[in-house]
Length: 441
Image (cartoon, rainbow, N blue to C red; front, side, top):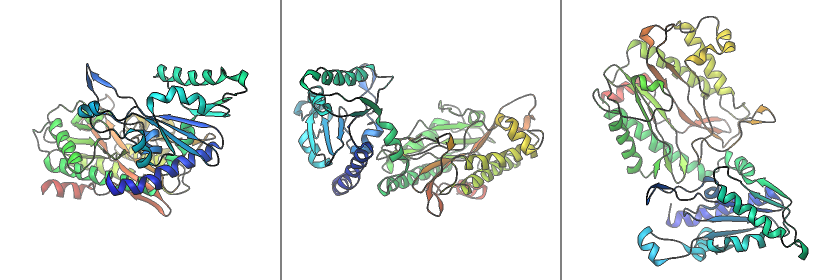
C-alpha cells in the first residue's frame, strides 16, 4: 500500500485502533514491539515480516520499532524507530526515520529506537499498569521489560511509583482483531481473489507426470503476479497418498494418472492471509469412488457453511460437518454403528481428525479465543473463519483397499455477515462439474 491510499487509511484506521486500545486500557501504558529480523544462514536473512499486533496498531512495516500507547485524556502514541542512515539505505533500502514516520503514520510523537531504554522508565513513571507481553522465546526482550520496571522502582525515594500490575496486551488486542473492519475486509477479499485465481491456474496446469513442485511454482507465480507479497504459509501440494498427511510440505513427488491432488495454499496481501484448499483429479476426471467421497466432503462443507451466521456457536459448523461425514463413513462401510454412535465414540476421527475451521486475518491461525467462560463463543458480523472439512483414508486392515490413500479437503474463507455469511473464496471452483469443466478447458 502506498501513496494516496496509505495517506487516507493511516489516520482513519490505525490511529483509531490505537485510541480503542487506550480506551480499553483506561489507565496505564502499552508497549508493543515489532518482530526482529532473523538470520537464515550466516549473513543471509529471512524475508522480513513485521509482528501482526504491532502492524495492526501502526501500519508501520520496518524492523527495529516499538509502539508505546499511553492511556488518558487525551491518549498518546509514541513510535520508536530507526533513524535515517544514508549508508545503510544504500545497502538495505529506504528508512522513514522518526520525524517522517510520525507525520506519515499519524503518531503523536516519535523517537529514535536507540532512546527506548532511556525514555521508557520516564513514560512508565506513576502509571498503574503496564500492558506488554513477555515472550517465552525471547529472554532478551523479557529482561529489557523487567529492566524498565526496575529503573522506575529505583526512584521510589523520590516519590515515583512503578506500575503495580502487568497485563498481556494481546488479551485486549485479540478481541479487537477478531472483528474485522472495512479496511481489513477489503484486503482479505483481494487476498481471497488472488488465491482463488492461483488455484484455477493450478487446475489448468496439472497433468499426469507433473511434479508437485511444478504446480507449487504455478501458485507462487500467480500470487506474486497479482500483487500478493508472499504465500501466507508454506503451500501444501499433495498428490495421492501425500494428501493423507495433513501438513505435507515436501512437494517433490510426481503426480500419477488416477490420483487426486490436494492443494492447500493461500497468499498474504498487505499483511492479510487467505487460506484455501481444493482437491481435484490429476487426470481431469474423478473416478466413481473419488467422486462419491468428494461429494460427501462437499456436502459436509455446505452444511458447515450453512451453520455460519451471527449468534451461532463457533462449534456449530464443525458439528454440522461431522454429522454429514459420520453418515457418509457409515454409508461407505468405513465406520460401524449408527451415526450417533460413530460421533459419540469418535470413531469418525480415524478419517477426519481436525476441526472444521479457525479464525483468519493478519495471521493464518488468527487471534481470538474460541471459548469464553467455558462456552463456545458466538459468531458475530465481521468475524472471518475457514470452513474446511475433509477425509483422509490411510491403508489399514479394516479399510477396503479401494479406499486407500484417498485424501480430500475442501476449504473456503467465510465472513460472518448480519444476514448469514459470505464465502470470500467462492471464485475457486469446487463442484465436480465445475472442476472437470475447467480442467477440460
